[in-house]
Amino acid sequence: MVIDFHTHNFPDALASRAVESMLARLEGRLLPVGDGTAATQLMDMARFRVDRAVVCPVATKPAQFRHILDRAKAVAAGGEGKEPARRFVQLASLHPADPDVSAHAREIADAGVRGVKLHPYCQGFRLDDPGVFPFFAVLRDAGLFAMAHCGGDPGFPNAPMCCGPNEVAVLLKAVPGLVFVAAHLGGVNGNPPHATDVLLPFENCFIDTAVLTPDETNPEARRVAAEWPADRMLFGSDYFWRDAAHVADWLRECRPDAADQEKIFHANAERLLGL
Ligand SMILES: [Zn+2]
Image (cartoon, rainbow, N blue to C red):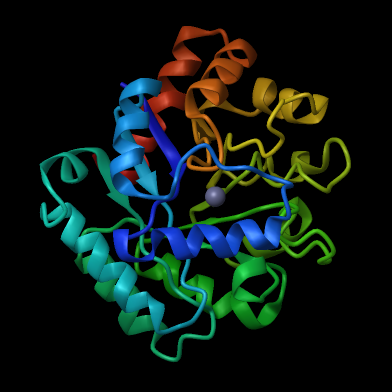
């Protein structure tokens, strides 16, 4: 069983427009392997031997919370077909500027969705801003995990670091008990070697393995993938941007231990998602 904890797709009506606008911002720094549709993702999952995929949408405006949660419910109920219902686990998303965040967080939890995806660059906030601590406390109190893009993003090459390991650490100190998934190996990209070590003491801090560099030559990425505690690590590829089979092969090479692989490739994800 392989669960890819970090993937993206869009509703069919939005996919080409959404992918095009992201490509324009990226200016070739990252080239996709998929087209952003669920149908292509299902075919690629079969090819990559990925059984289930966590789909991570981001509410770039507070109002998008509704569309994203509606789709999560529809997919789970089979509204997009039997295969999507079986294979996809849709996360919800909330915007830190949402004026109704408590009610919305409860709605997400009531819908059986376990976590929300956030993207500080796309949503315009810093993880270490005290102004967002109450927002994260609401997520915690609703029993939701927060999963955030961490580290530099090739779509925002000139933006100051707002979601690296140090910023995550400030947040987790301020909101104890928050279950947090620090995507992209805890924010390796754009931060000095060993920066992610600051997150090791936080028992509720997971990382995913969506390494952003297509050739995985970054020695720090390899070090983190090899050394991070297996109990708190989730295989994630960032499909449709990356080839999930390639990331999985790289990760198996970094973590040859079979017991570690069991945890990283599905058991931790099953625990977090309540599967
Ligand atoms: Zn992503």
